[in-house]
Length: 358
Image (cartoon, rainbow, N blue to C red; front, side, top):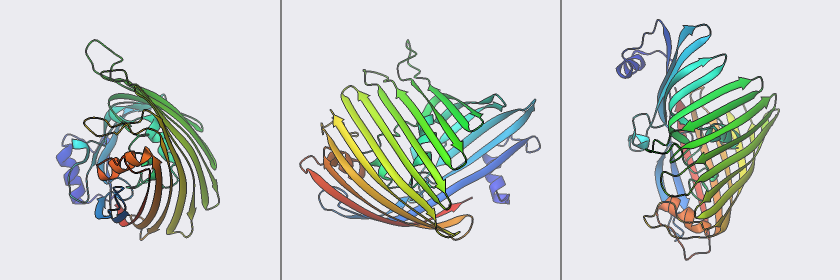
């Protein structure tokens, strides 16, 4: 981090009570934006050009720090804001909508409290072939069928425990439902295990979200693997979701490859197979529309060129072929209106942008 006067002034404005002599404070962020063209975005053969916020890696700024408490223990905190680089607006309708937590850390592990990522997010994204450690990109095929597999991955009112045992990392998380008279209503519970040793990484995670009202419990799960051979990294993964009422099931499987062609140029590509079945409905309509079963195939490729250690240019291309009820999910998610009278549709996109990390 470059300790310029402007950065410290911003940090001081947010946390005026921090004593720099006794604690460590880091200001960090990502600013990413892109120009994107999408064909047939609405299933009615209407194309769209736009400036999209956070082309690769969600734009954000954050403050994180720790204080040595002695005996190998520390107090830790993190505050992270998301914002749109296209319009400057704060994301998630909150100043620190991405993350906001405080806790303790030591040889026994880390225990934190607040708005935090669950294990499903922290582990599953590690195996996205196009992630590159910057976070998902705007048109990531993992969003085929809508925001399904990661919906609710930031958990409010949560308690998270993390611990490393050699090559094995464990995370357990619980979100309070805060419903009077019931500890179960609205609560979330989950966990995951990550194994990393040399070139091999394996991960598995599960998350359950209980309804605040009604009886539609959500079950999300993922498994993934990656392996490094020289400059290449291979990825494979499977994610699933089960909604109990009405009964609806979703899954996506993917394989991909990343390759560091030159010190500055990284290439990646992946194939995704998506399936939905049961009583699948729209996600965002006031009165849900039944869509039913369907499937989709998606491919995507990304070229990322580093101009420096902090600034990169990227070029991305993707194509999604959806069938059956998946057409309704796709058109609702990307264009806002579900199409139910078209049995198959193809959407193609291209995106070019810039990302700066500080």
